[in-house]
Length: 110
Image (cartoon, rainbow, N blue to C red; front, side, top):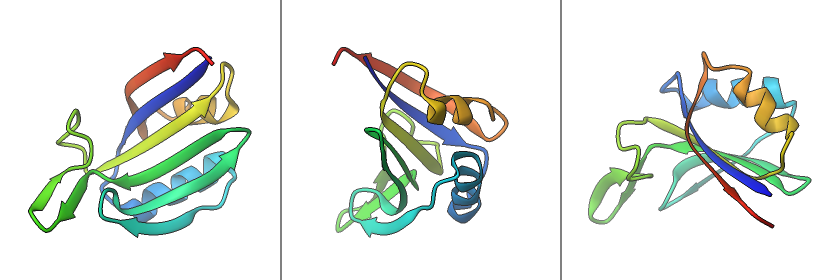
């Protein structure tokens, strides 16, 4: 079973959020920018798990729009994909509800 989760963050500062994730995950981040996610940070692929921190607002030639239409009011979003039951990464993120609010979680059979 794989778990995919979306989290909102208790800050609007992507650099602060990146620091929070680096502290609890003990992983370094790779920065990037694309049309869909705007500025973002990704945290490797560790055992099939992948964390992406991005702006909640994207922009293209037609203007600005929510990165995830289910959560248009979130200024930052964090996506966890490919997590397994008992994932240390998921547990670490969930251990800080003061910083990370789970907005959605889906489970899929392998």
